[in-house]
Image (cartoon, rainbow, N blue to C red; front, side, top):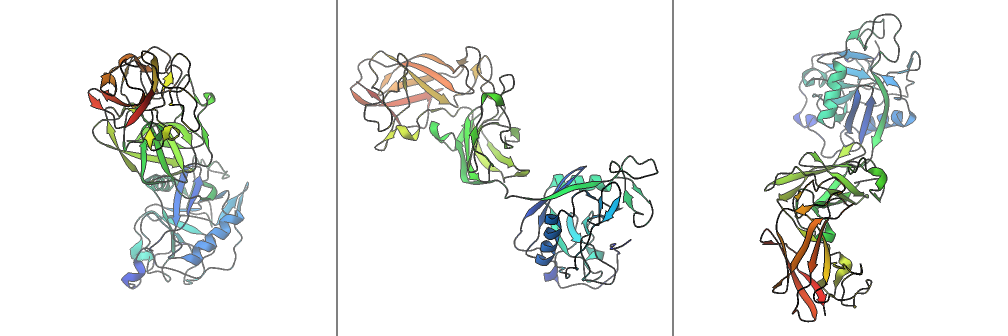
Length: 451
């Protein structure tokens, strides 16, 4: 068969020629009928070979091609033929020069070529199923490795293809992997097809220290089960939007939004908001307090490197967005229960409202205040009356306030509501607000205007 890989003994090459390249280029996805294989292209070590491969890819030459050769424990080979009811050889351009530098180890992808002609590679490529360095590094000038399987999932698909039974249906298909083959005419259903090979965009990346509890609620470097978490980075999504009612199923929040998924400690989070530079999620309920959890964003078939986030039993934070930071002083976004207006000192640039009055009830919203009964904080629209199980106290200055209600906000997901009576005897002006959860103060320095 044309362009086979034939083991031949050779001599050792200088060690430098076997070193991996210093930088990696694009990633491409081999979409097969047995699963996807992501391959990182090694542009630094084989620039002409990568350019040759991408030329055929962009031309569509590999669309609906198939693996036409399988040698278990050695290689699986493709790129030679497309299938359109019958096999058709892929037209080839002039060959590319040999660029052997990287060793033919397990999971690498190399170019096939004619025997005794190092510079004869055109369209065909193969996956090394094992460490074939002892033969392929020294045969025929060395076989040019131009890619490497990017992850364990891709290696598993590679091995699954290698496990497909091999048949001799006549030259050049005398080592042809076929599925569910009973003899006779080979159909597309029998072949291991490569339906397409596509260049992937840049992988999602989380910035250093880019995972915090929701910034409008304190922006801490820690969170609790059910907390909202802001994730900052690049290439996190391809669209910008927040979840809507259509994304919920039976009151359950979505774990994917515009193709974006997030895991916290390996568990699916509930995706509230996506954009290319920020994703906001609600942490799952079953996180273990007292340790660090890995946060991973996946989009476009690629995943970010994990970013670590400390998990606590509670991580209470009150709604206090930047618009409520006036002249360097951060105010809580408290609401007058009677009117629904915000509590302000009438001097906020963009927010109307009035100061709190003695004896009136204010509403504070928060996240991260821990378990409720009955029900769960995470991923579910609050439908029933709930109560926060941990004691939450409010102090205006040095005076403790009466907390009339500590619960989840009905019809929202994981947002807490505290109805608090403004104490008597407070001085007019900006009064400091202290909140304790289970006797421990939350890490926000907040103020409430009073008159």
